[in-house]
Image 1 (cartoon, rainbow, N blue to C red):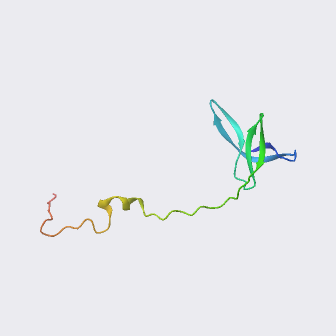
Image 2 (cartoon, rainbow, N blue to C red):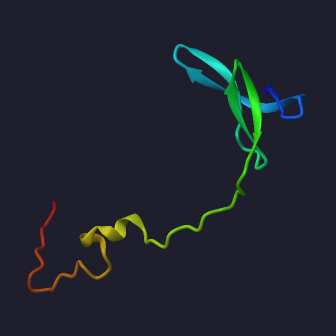
Image 3 (cartoon, rainbow, N blue to C red):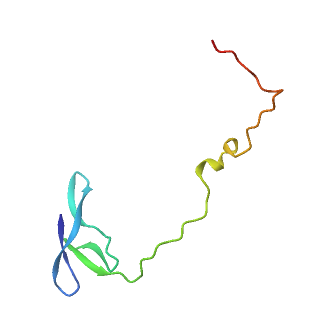
Length: 91
């Protein structure tokens, strides 16, 4: 699906789009995935505006797995000595 977008030089270009829910209806809107242009709804039509910044990937924070925050799931936290172990006979 494409959406007509007005660019700053006056040309109208078809840009990849998608459907978004707007209240009780769906509207066509362009996908803002272009690193050079962002698309805004102005005066009843989609208008392209040049991005004034650069797109760059952010560094991921150094963090461990989610289970490492639970003390009972840490390595070595569950050790049973043979004299305190309880044995049950199932059967």
